[in-house]
View: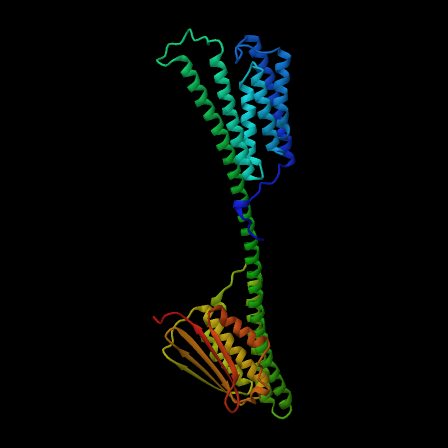
Amino acid sequence: MEEPVWNEWRRPGPTPAQRRRDIGIAVLVMLCAVEFTVLVNSMGAFAQGRAPDLREQLAWVLALSLPLVVRRRYPLAVMLVVSALFIAAQWRQLGDNLVPSAILFLAIFTVGAWEQNRRVARWSRIGVIATMFFWLGFSLVRALLGPPGNFKNAAGPLDPVLASVVYGLEFNIFFFVFAYVVGEMAWTAARRQAELGYQAEELRLSQEQNTRGAITAERMRIARDLHDVVAHHVSVMGIQAGAARRVLDSDPAMARDALHTVEETARTAINELRGLLGVLRADAEPDLRAAPGLDDLPELLENARAAGLEVSHGVYGAPREVPSAVALSAYRVVQEALTNVVKHAAAQHVDVRMRYLDNALELEIADDGRGPSTAPVSGFGLVGMRERLAVHGGSLEAGPRRGTGYLVRASLPTGEKP
C-alpha cells in the first residue's frame, strides 16, 4: 500500500449519514430563522430600523436556509449562493440579522472544511470575505450620507458615529476570520485522522506480516528439529537392526547388544519427539533446559560408535557455559553431520573437534569416507544446519577434504569471553 502525499490529500465526500445530518441542520436553522423573524417583528426591534412585510422576510430566511441541505456535497456553490442572498437580504433591510449571519458563517466554514480543491477553497473564501467588507463599507457610507442616527443615549468619550463604525469593523473582522480559521482547522483535523487511519492500517498489515513470519520461522525450526531427531536416530537404529539380523544366528550376544542399542536409541528418539510435540501445545512453553546440549555430545558420539564408526573427540580451549540456544544448535550440527557420515560416507573414522574461542564456539566434523561423489552437498540436512547457524549469526563451511573424506566446519558466536 503506497503512502499518500498528504499535502495533496483530498477529503472524501460526505457519507450518507453526514448528508442526512445536513438535512437535519438545515431544517433546524430554518425553524430558528422563522422563530427569530417572528419574534423580531413582534418586538419591532428591526436590525435596520425598518423591514419589509413579514411574509417577504420569511421567504428570505427560507431561501437562505435551504442551500444548507447540500452544503457538504457542494460547499463552494452553497457559499456563493448564500453570500449573494445575504447581500440581497441586507439590501432589503431584513428585520433579523442574527440567523442570516450564522448561515453565512456555516457556509464559509464548510468550504474551508470540505472543498476538495484547496486553492479554490482559499481564494473563494478570501473573495467572499472581501466582498462582504466591500458591502459593509458601502452600507456604512450609505448610513453616513442618510439621515443622522439616533444616538440620544450616547455617553462615551468617542463620537457615536465613529464608535459605530469601529464596532462594526471589529465585529466583522472577528466573524470572518473565525469562520476561515475554523474551516481550516476542520480540514487539517480530517487529514490527520486519515493519516492516523493509514498508519493504523500499515501497523495492522505489518503485525500480520510479522505474525506470518514468526509462524513460518517456528515451522522451519520444528521441521529442522524433527529432521535432526528422526534422521539421526532412525539411521542408527537401521544400522544396528541390520547388524543384528546378520549375526543373529552366528553371534547371538552381538545381536542382543545391537538390539539393545536399537531399543535405547528408540527411547531417546521418543523422548526428544515428546519434547518437540510439547512445544506445539497451545499452553506449553519451550523448555530449553530439557533440550540436548554440549553435555550430551558424549552420548551422541557413543551412538555413532555403536553404528560401527571409530570416533575421536577433542575439546580445545577453556570450556565455559554458552547460551542454551547456542548449545542446542551446536548439538544438532554435530548430530546432523554424524548422521550424514553414517548414511552416506561409508567412512571408517570420524574426528569431532570443538574449540572455545574468545567470542565463538567452533565445531569441526571430518571423516575419511568416499568423498564428494557421495557426500550430501544438498538437501534438508545442510539447509537445516545453515538455518540454525544463521539464527545466531554463525557460519557453515561444508565440502570435500583434500584427498578423501568430507569436512563440516561451523562457527557459533557466544559473546565476549568472561
